[in-house]
Length: 163
Image 1 (cartoon, rainbow, N blue to C red):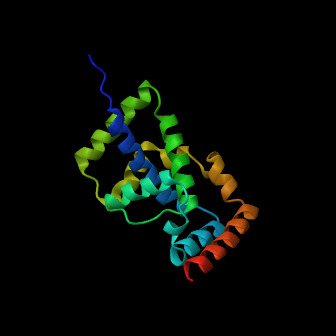
Image 2: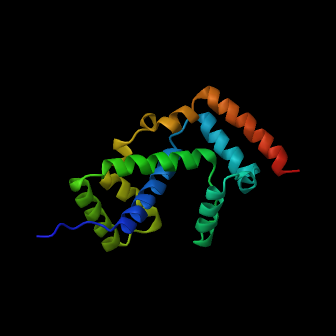
Image 3: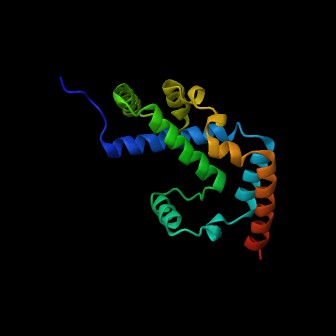
């Protein structure tokens, strides 16, 4: 009997969906300085002005062409990259591929509404299995001394964005 698993594109797409929802949930669990940094960036900075890498701009163009008009902050980008890495790591074996296939079929079968993705995260157990402390880049980014530096940098970006 042939084992059922997702194609590479389907796997990438589903892991992106899981990581986006994971990021939404974990952003609410960040410390106060990190949440303030996100607030300042979302409210007062035009982040597209500060994209320096061609690759980042192409990804942003691609996401905007799909209708996602938000520009993620540096913290959101790091969190999503780390989340995708750990989610891939969790499902990167035969048993994990089967589980991912089953989660995807269940997801497609029930046609989850946009607010029901937390159910999918609960089913996969990602919220309990991946802690912020495990995400090394996020952990170092959100430490107090680092956040003070990033908030100062954000104030500079605010001045540049609004002049």
